[in-house]
Length: 230
Image (cartoon, rainbow, N blue to C red):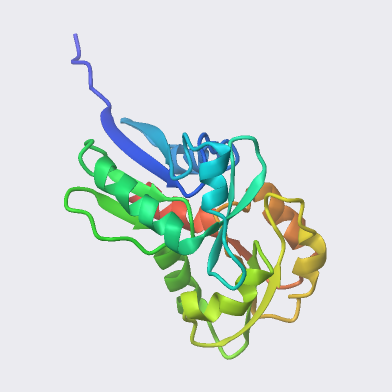
């Protein structure tokens, strides 16, 4: 009788700057990450920076005029625009706690966060992966970037450093942004990055119907890296 082969266990902590569960992101990413994997049981747990907060506490985290901001999703599905500074303060506290829970990877579901390095767990920082990929592909043409918020266009170059020319447009993945119209405005670019983990595969297909340039999806870039680490 042959021996039973135990599947290798691999645990991922997904951390969002919004509220969990992120039914708009995690199932799609897990499908990409685990497709065709053999002999490995991949499980995940979600953590949200805004989990458990009441209305007053959420209001206190709102971004003020002129402040660097994040657009993210509440459990209800509604969009919330939070202060980058205050959100990152809470994020780093949560990461310190997760670091001691035995995960193989911690994955940040945001392409704009800066964190304090952890001692025990490898962190997949979506922003660094996406930005490095985009920089590796940049040529003498123009990079098209789709962002969630108009207000993020003004401070984009303070948060992301690209070597070439850029053309920026905004279309929210949470508040019904006109992705087809905005993507069409980037047809003259060399390629386009949908620079938010909130953009889905379905939104990517919508963008591709009107944009003549190649369009990349942030969450798929990150999922590809995670898959190779299992």
